[in-house]
Length: 154
Image 1 (cartoon, rainbow, N blue to C red):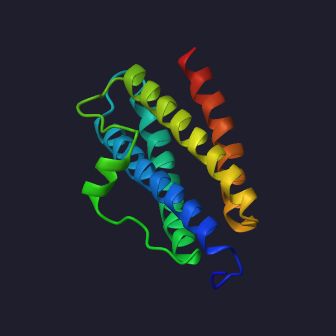
Image 2: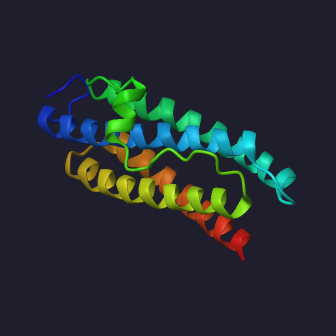
């Protein structure tokens, strides 16, 4: 058992999945930060604000995920080279139009939601209610955002 009473092997598996999620969130964050800075066109004012809201939220989640890894007794990834090597979300460079940026956001949400559902399964099996609750909260919030960004696209 680890320090919070969970099976060490199962906690290690959950931590590994959380580290993978952390890498994806870091690249997602950097992409959205770039979209915020570089958005152009007639949707500038509304997307500039929305992207700022989104990257601020992603930054909070990055910290929560890293702290959950620590709570489970493991070490969170903390180098950008590790994030690039691990992430399924790829860096987006020189995208400044509303269609491309919103499509990228939706694709990134899809990837992290799938990963979070897998973590839900692993954390449930490990009786890890803390991780389970965190992932459940993220998923419900992000499913609504996917609906909203999809509606925005028309």
